[in-house]
Length: 564
Image 1 (cartoon, rainbow, N blue to C red):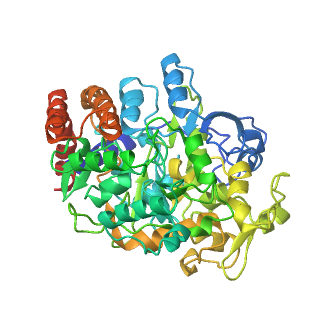
Image 2 (image 1 turned 30 degrees about the horizontal axis):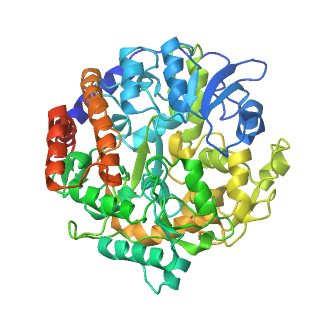
């Protein structure tokens, strides 16, 4: 509570500082265009591009920015955001803004407070500079404090969403595991309810088909370890056990937890020895895992099926949360808070303005567009225009004919006429900034399509959209919500700001600890190091010598100060 008060006072002081007037070329009379006609303004933007995403010149949204916002964009896409960021900041060859590049809180403090290469946005969240975000912060008084550093500075704008049916998958922080129901039927099994039943089922799958790998994935691609750790009581999505999490209400680092983590290593060792997981578990890359999945050689995998099995994704269903001898409570980790009401989720790191930006006003007006009250702008950036908008406003740009929604709330792109192809089309041609790693107001991300399609005239009149089980993206969300929604438990906070000095100390501990844990885990699992009680004691003793308890104290103290 003390930290929240300090941040509130700091923000009040910052926002009281005088700012320069908006440039005269900024349009303040209406939402669009952002830049008045007759002016030539350009933003240099670095954006993340994952495999399967379209090139900037083929993306509808960037055409829309230039045409409707009247902002020229020079977009540089990167498929390796971590390396790009490191090189860009080291050389000080920076764009105006980064979008979707996943800045961690320690990076925000480092490049913002220490290096001065990121702009503190706190003073600009005003009614004049960012009217939409300002209005949102007025309705959500704790919003700005949650995205502020310990010094009260804001180096990244947030993405805010609620945990509705469509987006629940986004808030389980990547913990998603799907089992092949056809294979279950073949061995006469139901969905397991406990870890012991799951392991027994995996062995039965192997006995039924010796060519199948019952528990798919590898250490670097869809690692299945977190499924086991969750069943053992850890609210985590980190299969290495390196991320601080909650277990029985206490903050722990699983890899250093003598009580249970040794048992996890014993289980993984046995699964590896018996061919239940990949023999080359620690060297198999994502492409190899996807190829194995495309050949339908897995029984269970920690990734959605429709991306590799577009014709048989309906055979896959999310698993139940599992209990075990170490944990008698079904639970599933989520980043959402307020689970009994709005189930809000905040993320940061998706939008930053660098010190190279000479036109902060335009950069922030561009960002503010994403924070409209009804999430229509989020919807437009994520799904693109409706067919009616394309026809009436001529904003298809030769890329899309738009999408339609019928009275049953089923929608599809006229470009595909096939909901099963919508995912691929959208990723290749429509959106430029992934919602989960971007910015904006996604509070109405599920019902806003009804508003955009003209089926309602008020967002509060929206009904719960029925997801389409024939659509692969919808199908996995339906299964995940059915299996885990009522078992969600809020994780250790994923937005944690330490001081610059503490971040350096934490980083020093992590360098040694993380390397050691990964090396020794690989040895234990593959049998290069015996998983005996004596060897496990030696392992935990070595971790304590590297400072794992001191590292844990930072996170435990932070949690204590914030929530207790």
